[in-house]
Length: 453
Image 1 (cartoon, rainbow, N blue to C red):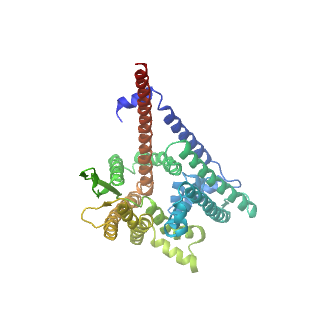
Image 2 (cartoon, one colour):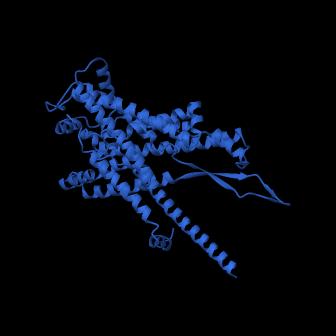
Image 3 (cartoon, helix red, strand yellow):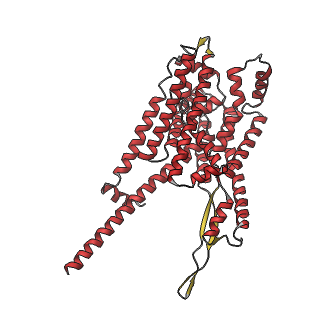
């Protein structure tokens, strides 16, 4: 859209709806950030903060990043929307392999509502399970000799579970309101706001290290340039596509045989998105989290085995690096295989009378598309591994006080790109409606003049 067209839309009041939607999104995110500072009843905030500092380097860091710091304060929104995201991924995977769920999904809007309702039920179950685990674990913890909870027993468990589940479901409702009344995907924007909320403290920590002399000014400049370069690289890959040329059968119009113009079938380079890093991080840090909560230096039996495993799975260790890369590769192929069916694509092309040049329709087309997708998935998985291992190198070798890159950077870039795309689509739709109205009015006035003549 040109500047003149945008100015015309602004002058005609067409941007009022867009600004109202953006204002609703900002107001909803303010409510979310306020909720992350409301602690669960019966918790000592100071002791919780000290306990969290003692368990740095575990899965708690990943969960705290997604919750916008709410987990380190054990607020009512400590679980964030991750139970709903996990439930959505599970339901999506089941839909790909369960015939009954496939039929329900094919029903259209009614099927989508059913699946969405079941996803919410699954989110309540997951949130209840996680909240019970948090309540049971927190009660047995102390920080510097001070109990973390002010009350114990079943009373605290019930209050904590109800508060955490209510906070998660409130965020799910808030995300749906953002999607309907605002602009962009509500769940993604909530996670985005939680990650971005930690950037000021990270930047402040970097400046403090630079002032203290631990970081040289040259290294800070190099870090800024590296952030810009990696961000540009992520944008380039996320926008990258492999376009398959598709031709359509010739159409006869009267005595002439017309050849339909060639079109393209786009395939993303990173078809799995941010799912592989999330799953890989959660699984690879799980033993360290169990040791942090239940283990100690003199642990034996299962706790001792977990302690030995966790020492080999620390960032910077060779075993950790190999396992992390392997899990990202596995989940990239696994998730892509569940969500993308080459046979279905080939069948749809055959029904539409389309074909890939040089490839026979049907089974050969499916095999060809499957080969292309496999190569793209391998490239995308390597890209994810490189981006996700970058923060580990900076933290282990240079003590950078924040996770630069990885899942957080991917989520930030993808959400911003999606938001910009939806804003542009909204502006284009407003421009299209304005042109249609003008065309209709012109047509009516022309008909009136003809009648008067």
